[in-house]
Length: 302
Image 1 (cartoon, rainbow, N blue to C red):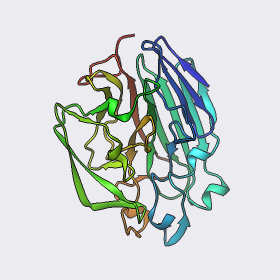
Image 2 (image 1 turned 60 degrees about the horizontal axis):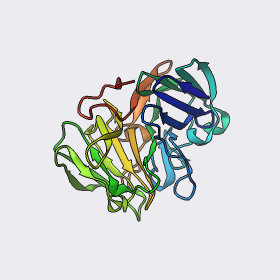
Image 3 (image 1 turned 120 degrees about the horizontal axis):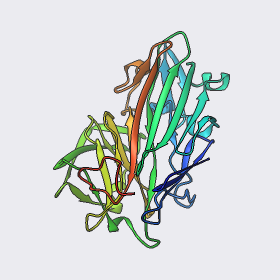
């Protein structure tokens, strides 16, 4: 499946409704990670119905414990294309008897990709098709490859427009869960911080409390390479693999469990819900460089 306009060429697989290519025509650059399994075998998976891991790989729903897998099952299931235009496509995945064995809710998950001049907009819709309220977390996980063949993390910086510092927590690697008891400060200079290998020694940096609404991966001289806008997201992750030539920018509506969380899913912090017959909606936007990092609106030069 291909979407194309004067600025971007985007390819999408029906498996997981995953974007597999974002090509920036203006700069002649492949922006999205190519899924080299030597580092990470995915491009930009959809995380649903759980972001990250749940405590002890299980979730409690109405007193019943169900097994879970990291980042949920949507990324490993085939979606159906239900709408296609030159610059927009929508994909549908619905609950099945198999999904109900691990997630006992009836739902429809619709992912829509739209080219908006010099930007790719990603829309999520979760429809409750059952009789009771449903609960879930959902997230994006796009990985952005470095432009040059021999470039490393140290060749890039992160820019957070309007920020002078941020707070983040890390994963307790022994427990495979977030540890909110230790909060770290990410000091910024001119809204920026360098990217290093050491940043990701404990998996992802997790930013809670809606701190990140816009972030850019920039070259060391400050030139924007690729950015993201994600207003209204309570959680955000930044992740990479040791020595891998990519960085993931991950907008999350809810995130992995904290260490020791064993309560009902409905009590999980930042869990999303939808009543019978209702829908949950959210979106974020990916923007290639060639725009002002401080005021990009997804409508850069064509």
